[in-house]
Image (cartoon, rainbow over all chains, first blue to last red; front, side, top):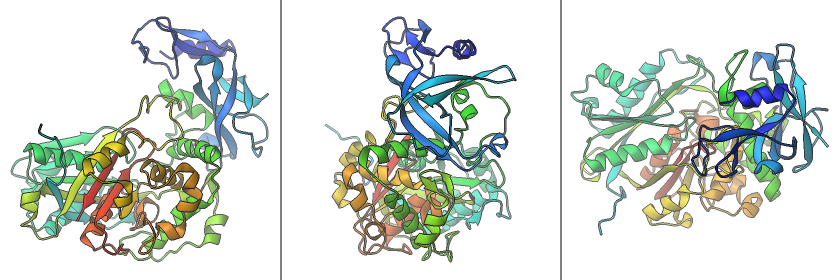
Length: 124
Length: 389
């Protein structure tokens, strides 16, 4: 169910699940459309532009990989061109910055040596 | 037409808890802590532990009803109920389920319990130390968004932004919990008062939560026993009646990757009206409230969603003076709660609600009759309970 999303991200494309039956967007993906219950769902490419819905600065490492990474900013981005679905990511740049709520952001594709790509965000 | 309700048909008749420990400090296994709490609740009720014929719990409690029934030698198990959902969202719901079972005639004495020794199993405050992740968690964990503190902070932050709220209500909740714990010998933080300076200078876990805005991680167990109102009248303790219970989740409340449509919410908006309707009261009638605090910010939003104040009144209403016993307008978390009594996944809050109605709290609100519990804000399902003396 998730494969299409991660395959597109590897191609540096942001996609959101859309229902071919009623046009509704949903994220994370589901097996059926929550509005019309159709199972005709597709990954629809979106612009990668959004706005900061909420953000927090995280100081306490909760995973061995984060021991040297704190503080960092986690944020929730709303995508107006995809029914305002939200995505989670990190805000790139100074971890001490204070991004305004609702500020415009843009997706940045971060390729990792292990062969996967993550979606990060930067203020526009 | 017959009204379907549990109102006043069932009472809490017994309370028990193990000694509460810091994480990793319990000298006995979690199962034995559960047995200790259950046995004490039966003693408190003045019944034999073998009179128990049902169990209800939540959050995938490891100590199953059938193992407990076998270990305790119960003659017959008639009701075994586990409520879906993680976090403390089922604390009040399990009590509601137990009450429903008694009204339905499934069982006579149902024990609600929660045993949790985070020192013997995983910690809730740490992510699984995995190197790869798939499915829904893949949309959050690789970004270091991995534990409840993170998404509760995200929801709280948006609410604070929308309503012009600063750190002061969060500080008030943390300090009220610590204040109440200083009167409660059961509390893990008994004898450890918290000053405003210590709060302000404590390290950030995740903004806006300082260390003291976060619940503890503990080892322990809590239990309560319910019986029909008729049986309750002949037992040892003053009956405390179940006035109303509710559980549920809002529209797509558990959508993945932070996609709950009503995000800056504690998830009680759909429950609270049902709860008050069943109880036949309004928020003004509530004398004292126990509101689940995994993190302080969720308490202020829960207070709004239960009608104790409006969002734009939070700064004036959620103050240390207003939420501390005995004199506050609405004392909250009068045992010290998850932050300073014990993180018994919120079941200690249910026991405290009952104690307030018995008149035996260590921070008693004088004359308290109606006591509200809100369980597990921001998870789904969440649940609510009102009891009265």
